[in-house]
Picture (cartoon, rainbow, N blue to C red):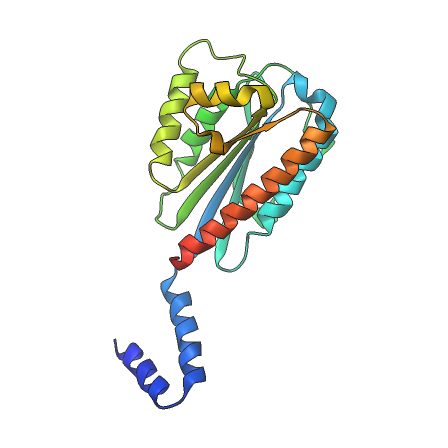
Length: 231
């Protein structure tokens, strides 16, 4: 209270510049650092092989955009999974600036598509991260086909988990699926069509998807900044 009084006195004394500087310091002191966890899952099934190179380029373009979100007031963490018949965690909860680009040698498509199980794994593992009011989660799942591995409760579990974390208002989950899969996937999963981007698994489709992903990350970064400063 005394600091605010001194600031007001300074303002009415005509020392306006000092008052502005004080207000900036107060906003930085009172606003905690925003922590954003960006988690990406990339389909590694055999059907992705014909666009393997383009998929690697697209993933690295997303990484570049994610790294640009990081500054002294935004702690951006990245986690990455690939999935085919199983789910492989490549890295987890790492600073965006420390994450290396994906290489062709590190992405060898083969096998089937464990989509639902992968989303369940992502949510389960990310939930282990200490939860804080300043902490937000952005999940991006990229696939070129339907789940071919779920013969039980994978879909119902995924629906329940997505609904649970989304209800916090701090989790955003987006899917990139084939054009002809969008309506059906939205209906089965309960995910809003606003959070599903349809794409074609060819060079032109990859280019459009890359641009859409970069724009989505940029919009998310803007919303996170607005949330951080209380707009």
